Image 1 (spheres, one colour):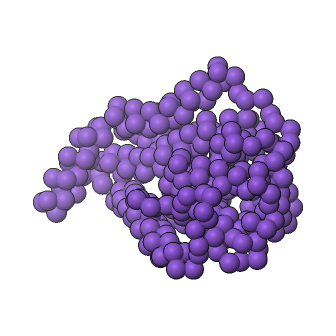
Image 2 (cartoon, helix red, strand yellow; image 1 turned 180 degrees about the horizontal axis):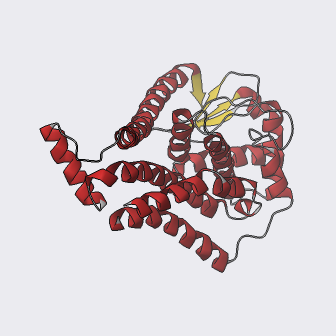
Image 3 (cartoon, helix red, strand yellow; image 1 turned 45 degrees about the horizontal axis):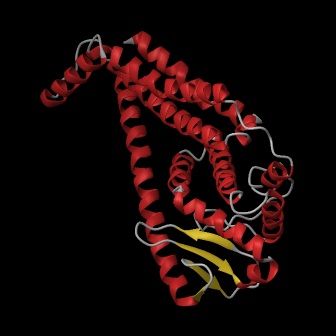
Length: 312
């Protein structure tokens, strides 16, 4: 049990610092954003499981020689209201920490999705009252706003792409098709679910710098994925021009929440410059062997804490 707890602690430390820092600063995710997004999700899940599993394993050492025996013993002692010999205050504290951390992450995830669902329903209701349909594009609504704005409103049964009057006046027909294709890609690929999960992680651990870095990196990746879908509709230069025109004035994220562009092209919230650069000078996609290697790494990250816990 002690060896498992130490191994899980090492995995948790690596996935809380060096690994996400390396991934956030690497150049290759822009070459294959879908693969990089899978890896980010594996890091988040494996990191959380390793952190909670390490605390739990350390806390269960006095209760048994392996995880399952320890859990059974803990349940029995909870019923009788006793503690086994050798149980220290530290063990009880670690067990409480594992319970609190796991509950905090799960409850915060549920609260984030619930809150987002209410906001989206309210937003769709307002858009239905304050916008007009765009005849040439089904499922698209136009609001009377001078600034160039484009975003999507996801829903379980009814979604919408929202454009502003200023956007329609700013872009030509091809650029408008590119923007609409980009926003619809967000809806079809359910990017809001991934973004909400990482937003929940960040809000649950606001003091955790990697959570903020991960949220920003994932936000850029889903934008690149939507760009790749739009590239099937228009050429790269048209899409890059549309992104630059809209982004130079105002930017809205796929969750329908305003995000002000920060100063500097390399600021984490700058979701425009890296995408335009990628379209103007397209990088070569990862080779099939590299994609397989990253996918295998993501699978290994998910299996490692699971195997360690099952073998404890």
